[in-house]
Image 1 (cartoon, rainbow over the protein chains, first blue to last red):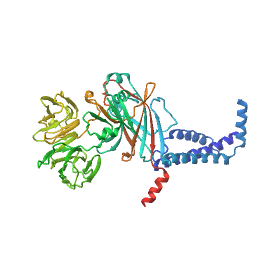
Image 2 (cartoon, each protein chain N blue to C red; image 1 turned 30 degrees about the vertical axis):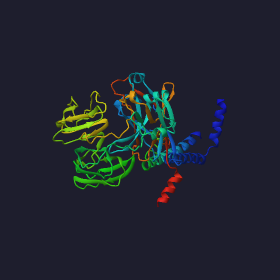
Image 3 (spheres, chains in turn purple, red; image 1 turned 90 degrees about the horizontal axis):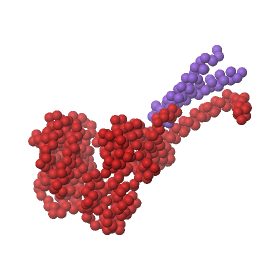
Image 4 (cartoon, rainbow over the protein chains, first blue to last red; image 1 turned 90 degrees about the vertical axis):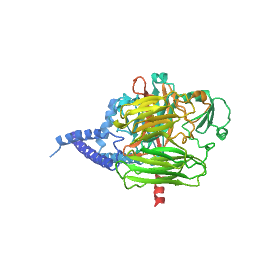
Length: 61
Length: 487
């Protein structure tokens, strides 16, 4: 039961991280420096990757 | 305690539903985007960036910041100790600002303080990219710090009048008496009516040949027209960076023109009439591909300011200067030659190397003659040059520098705020005007100049601890209203 819930929230987090990466990427293209000056996006990418691995290995068919 | 915490955590976990999590996550993303937009637009027009340069650890969460690396690396030790002069850094801002207050926290090594009688540190912002021109502002001046402690001081807003013996009760009184022979200036532009005694108009034409790049000179007018003919040659035949000419009277721009020379050769005749008697500064701004083949001044007095760069000379050069020390450089192997300053001979035997030559200053008021058979040299000094003894005149009040003769200085006028001291560190606040400053994709470009750092001794350094930049510009409402008014 708890496992199912974790998988569902992880899925939601995965979508959130993916959207954040796309939004930051577009912001940085149109307004250079807006994100990178304040925040190291590599951290977001690492979190997204961890999430992605978890997401792939626990995906319910 | 831990049980209570775990209990609450479990309670939150049970009460959580997907909708709440989704709202929270996307709400958070929207909040971050709004926050970044506010920092980017700076709607209030004011923003402060702080950079701690003494931090040695890597902040893995933080971004790249706004200060882009102090360079060149060979003039630095441990990233924040300056051992050479000058060093540069960029400050990437998201928008334009009209001014900045830079606060520098720094330490001077004991070797720097002990070994140098005259210490002058300046900072500046790039104003002209083509000519690599910076507007400089004082950060630290050891002599000025001593003078402010020991001499009689009269402060008028930002301006300081320092008198060895108190003869004047206000800055205005001092400026009204017109004798500035024992006065030096420091970071202060004094607008005064310099009158050349016994000046008479004559028909003599002063010709100067083959001046390379930008230059500026003073000329003197009395009941005559300002008339100078220029003949320019573009050695690389590029249409970009055409010569620009500026004329100033008492530090006010009275004439400017950007020339449009289609071919490699072009002429320009500067003619200004009905001018009051006085000193006029003429400035030619152009990149180094341009040569002024011939400059003919119909005004008999003409002195070049700080530098002359001569090229393609067939009969050598002969110039006069009021200074006794020169920085001389050759850019061509063919032009390597002896340089004679009065009776002393020096050798320029390496290209692109700056040679520092000086002679004993025996003739205090007289001019020093520099001559050479070279086909071209860049000669610089902290003074004036003339192409004939007759055309020389000196309208400038001396500026405080390493060579200032302290026995003959009785008064200093300065725009200078001494640094505050906090333990071993000095804190200097410098306000800079950014209206005409260059801002490109790398942001504003700044420099820190400390000419006493020769890179030869690692014990002599300036340790930068913090740089704090308070930028100020128009706020969002003013910006929008100015755009609407323009339309």
